[in-house]
Length: 185
Image (cartoon, rainbow, N blue to C red; front, side, top):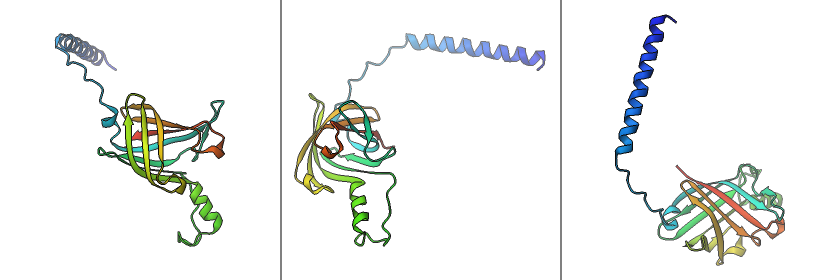
């Protein structure tokens, strides 16, 4: 590199820094807009969310991935209070017959155990940070017509985390199940 290139580069860098400094000072003198109040959860939840994690949490805090390390799933919440949720394992065995009505007992059992879907209406309680699901239909028939409450631990920006205490999966020896979603783009 010759002396001229070094001097030119140095001069350009100095000019750029001076310009940035001048712009920063001018920006500091500009009135800043008032901070906006946070949006209510009722507005924040509306949309489509992709499932990232669904873990059972054991009494000692150990996390057990319920649908493997990379579950698939989606939750959709409408502004008028309807929801749809579906989650499943990322890898599922296909039926040999290639017909959903002609699966073997083992294939049907594996398919049933590898996912859960339900839909209905929901109500948010901002004060206690809960969402109550009124389940109209579920792939687990025992949930049809039931009401269940979930604790929301995060609903900020593109992240949404909820959990439900025990009972949801008693055979898994977990104290609660936690789902982590990211807003779909």
